[in-house]
Length: 267
Length: 95
View 1 (cartoon, each protein chain N blue to C red):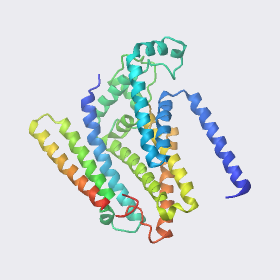
View 2: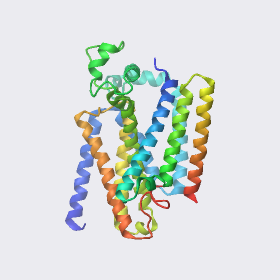
View 3: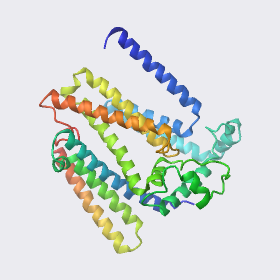
View 4: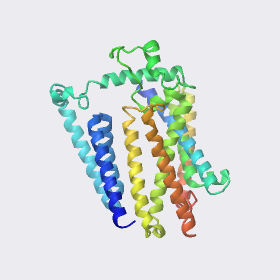
């Protein structure tokens, strides 16, 4: 890729990044902010050389401990600062929905206990909860569309077999990304240009998947919901990249072990 | 409100089965991609480690979820056996 095509691709990527960043800021999702804050250091650590990786990891752990200690010792001040100021009116920064989430999660767990094999059916949580498991801290007028946890929601929609399959999808996708990552570090393949592009794509897709996982711990995009298609696109891109990379490393050189072989990339 | 203890152990055995399912699924994918038999794909160390680790989690999850002492001991014993197998598979893959 040379000349104006490269410039075009860079401009397109920058425009897409700015657009997504703007949407991300405007959506005011705390889960999204936390996911980004946790995912970015992970991506940086993965990209660093091995020696620097450990130093950075130790520095981050120390920072997390210090921050945790400060917040724990000044918790009341932090709480008053957040809930007693204008920030409390900002849904992205208020803490008052934590109790509500805990109550919704408890109802979701009751639902899973009552419908373990089949789940209660896709997108029926909002109809079933007011009837079987009424909420006390949340007004019945408020429509609770999902369980505010992706994994609980998957179990509610599809039962425990469904959540097992859903987890397997996540694990399989991360496995493929690890496979690709190892392949691009292979001495034979590393000299080629595709290695850099594939690495960049792998880290981007991995970051997206990790951020989605972290976001899914406190919020959810239901499996049947329209925006959920983006998650499936993400999985499809990961599998596509793995297949493309696999074709490359199998055909390229007989010294390069194929994915998943004893000496190779699936280890 | 939430029994975090049972949620934690419940999540553990579900995660274990998720790992086993992922390993079987990945082996099936590799077998179809590389025109190999499913059994051969399943023999690669990565799949072996994943299946054994999944079974460790599964047994630990059930050990935490049962009330009878003998059941808990049995599940813990099985978890130890699978942990040993995981370690052996890891050692084999590095060799």
